[in-house]
Length: 179
Image 1 (tube, rainbow, N blue to C red):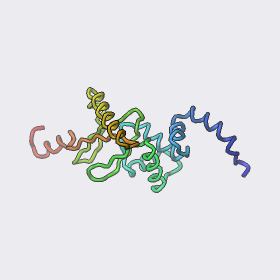
Image 2 (image 1 turned 30 degrees about the vertical axis):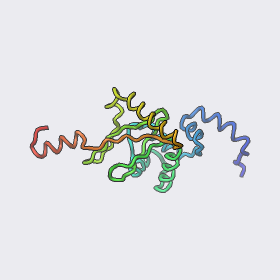
Image 3 (image 1 turned 60 degrees about the vertical axis):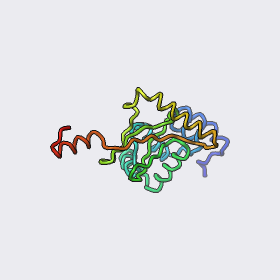
């Protein structure tokens, strides 16, 4: 019990710490505890903003990053909490696989492409760069219309599904057809 500090003493230094570490600031601002697991998961996803991960992929990626391994259930619960407060975007692809990605606060729409052949999920932000303003405006209009009806806490998932270039070229090459 000697290491326990009263709440009043811990509050002020904790507030200062959030300014030093942006991940702690995000967690605190969203009402989440600043645990090492939360810092690890959010830090990893923020460091890889263009990639979405399944639970298993995230667990595998994080297992080599830390001496403190996250068990499956802890990771599920943490991902769920981060998603509920809007720090992560959760998408369910055509095969009902959940994929998680850091959700930038400024973004209303996260365009991505889901390959129906290899199931790779690729961001389209750079591919749609010229139309990003139009996409953002359309997303904002849709969200504002829903807010006026009373809906809350929304984000827009813009998914394009089809066959990626690699799979299309691979299929063409294996059949002998020109690419």
